[in-house]
Length: 311
Image (cartoon, rainbow, N blue to C red):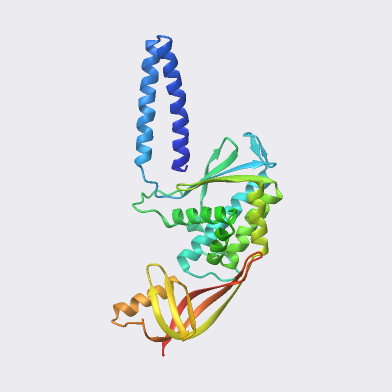
């Protein structure tokens, strides 16, 4: 369960125990005062340990409301199954893209097993589910899956944001398959007249009917066209840590964008071999995406895939 939710639970229990302790003191009940004091001390200790703890594995909670939910008692099985499947699809596509760099336009998503989340609890209040990354190994650093889950929740939130620029920035990072998965997620929510609250290690946000419909409209109206092209020009800059490049085609035309994992590894190999690609003329392969958002001009987004040869 996300640490944020565990802290909420402890805080609520602590408030209830504090109230009972105050009542015991007011009623001159020494036995009750002793018991509630001990319980309060234990809860405060647990809260302190949890605040200091660092969660290294993926954990996210999805709470649903609206027509598919019957209070805190139940949820439509068909709706719940679709939402869990579509959220997992978002995570799987994001994870595969991060690990492999590129995904084909069709076919199965690779590395699905490595990106699988498990339903570990049913979340009450409204009705929902806790999804966790389960492993017998302890982790020193955040797992790749934890990072991807947090990125997916950010994409969901910004897609539904009232600020149009938030979605435009997100759209530039999406590929066509991720856009489809995102569209399916919001279509299912909107068609069911549902709401959702998403909680993970860093995020806690709720999307009402208006926000969900806004996100559906944006994703349905946005198109992403991709093609691979070969460019020739002078490599004026490349930041391997930030995965950014800049290529000058001629005096008036500069192409810039992100760098794939494979191209960054190529660049590192050039440097370690004593070569200096910066300032040299290169033939490179670039994946060019034209993103056309709703009621906004098209944007060109480039990703350096591969260094082909120096010129």
